[in-house]
Image 1 (tube, protein in one colour):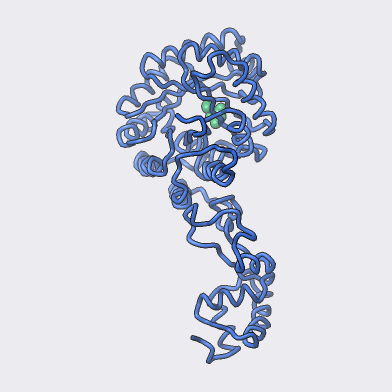
Image 2: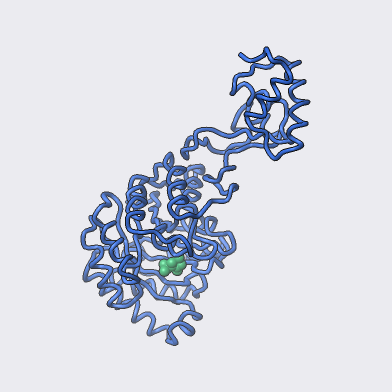
Length: 388
Ligand code: KIV
Ligand code: ZN
């Protein structure tokens, strides 16, 4: 792997599917897994095989059909979980077991009633056991965001010695600030012996709206894998949104960090996931929301019609959106009205436009948006002969 390649680890089918109401059956999961493979993700986390017979079957079937991506199954640091995951992954071209344990003092005390030393012992045993089935073993230090850096470094060092190939540093509770999360990655990169043998991975939750910013801070500071979901779905406020991190890296080439994602498939993939999971995306969602490339104020519309770069930092076609939308509202100006009218067949002279604009404002004040059909009505009033 080149040093500037950031691996995209998609967990839509595992962390994403944990959302209440988002449950998918195996058939639906297979369709999404196939699509993720075509999209170009490097790793598909297909599920948590020990969690239910249905999840076991889904992971097994996904492992059979995915051609290019690594297929991964989640486990706790528990032998039976690992054995079941290995079984579910046995048909995968590139299998990975993702095992781990909570490392923050709060997890050690309240979840396990244990000690730091015992947690390290369980972590090491889990990695060694997983290694007896597959070569590629990812270790997660759950709640790493709130784990003190010295102890986290010690855990990382021990699991690397046990054979871990990827170290997942989850901000499980979405608490870290980007500076803090970035500094954590830098600390691990500089202080963990043997770190060159493993890839550091970002896994950020969005409880304070910082999942994307934290993941980017992570890769700027040395991580080379981002764990994310389509549309950012996931536990509570969700996970890092795949489409966001991918486009951030693409739109900031000076960072010299690349992914293998075919960005032109992002929008369609987003639609597929929202429809099959019944989980709508808010209109103002970055990259894939209905308004992500829609302009509604007169000043912005005028600028975009002259040159889209005035208010757009990326070409909508790059993410699979056919064109920017000029949405007509009471805030729109003459330029936007003329632009939309032309699109539906009316080439307006200056006088016609002035008249049409008066009618347009009357209509726009009465409704949220002026649609093409309203323009036809306006034009009938203004000049029945101007239709080309
Ligand atoms: O958020 C988290 O810590 C997780 C781990 C189980 C990887 O999802
Ligand atoms: Zn998570």
